[in-house]
Image (cartoon, rainbow, N blue to C red):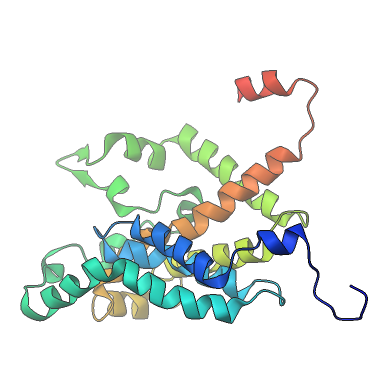
Length: 244
């Protein structure tokens, strides 16, 4: 520190993991996502990319990215290669399953922020909800008010400038909202809904269940809610926590 521009040394610098180690740790987390659904795994790979792009300038973002990409490819190779073989030699079931008109019907901005944009939770078969509990959470008055309150509190917490990694969380939330709401054609819907529906029914059919990108919204809202609750000062925190 005796000369200008010298790098800071000490416990903080020593605690920072190296780029290969950080990439390997992230790849292990990606491997634990399993291979049951490639689109869902692809969705959760977006926040790490946003995190690296919004990292402070001194961070070795591109060096970490250079290690992270091959590490993730290696962690997912056990199911990506068979998936490519299935795509080439197998029979696609996508033409016989749900279409974009079903998957994007409940993806309004309100439902997206509440976490009730999954089309299966709104599905009614033979006069009965396909998922009764999820249907009540999505459509009943009291759950709608409570989930709206929770989402609003999470958004309020994201406004705080004292929130760590605020830029990363806001960018992640914005990307998630833009992806999920892009295909909504209802009231106050997306002006690109028709074009998005054509794409989701065509080349991007594996991604037409846009609800799989919900973690991009849930993570920022959850951390925003935690930040808001942490800023509240109560005289009896144990009693307040028990009541909550």
